[in-house]
Image (cartoon, rainbow, N blue to C red; front, top):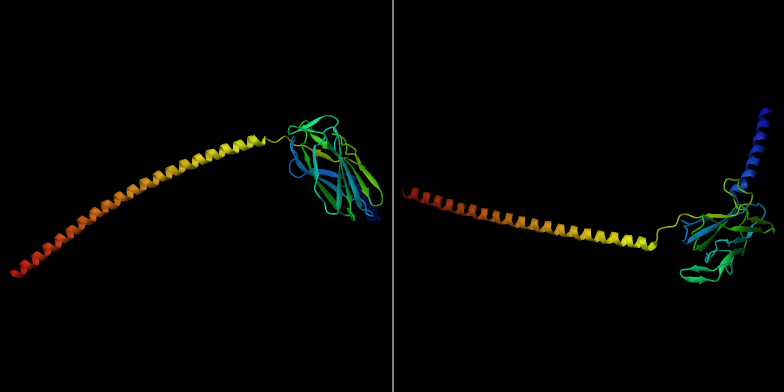
Length: 253
């Protein structure tokens, strides 16, 4: 009896833990592909899991921040889904690369052409966005998820630092520190390339000088050996002549 009671309590506790922890990992979220640096551009993925066992996700609406509007928003095509971009005039004038921005994206809506996100699956919706604000540490994207059974889940609660995560949190994109200026980085690379080129030239000159010295040494050695050879040869010839004379003198005697 005791063993069966312990097993029953354990099962109930496990179910309770799963029920309480489900919102923590099953909500709509946003993550960058690489870095999302302040003042730059990034590709982000809106990840949409299916939380239901008897319905598919057939629609996703992502509202873009109005306090930090984004001038450039381009969804990547997703097979089986149709994307619609909604634009509006910004509340205050904006500039990008010296040009006046008259429209900003306020919402992107994806609608399934087929079955959508079925139970037990998730879907990523990539979007290129920019330029990211320089005076913010994060961007909040409130999202609305619609199921095939007409159920609607609003992921719009903004998480607060130091507090527990809300039941239906909005996707939050964390921004990293601004990257170095591209022109400055290019200049640094050019300087390094010039230094490397100069070092290569100096190395080549040293090698050429070394080869030249080595060649002179080889020539000198060859000449010395040649002279020694001539002397040895001459000595041999002289010895042969003397030996011949001695033999002739002995025969005459």
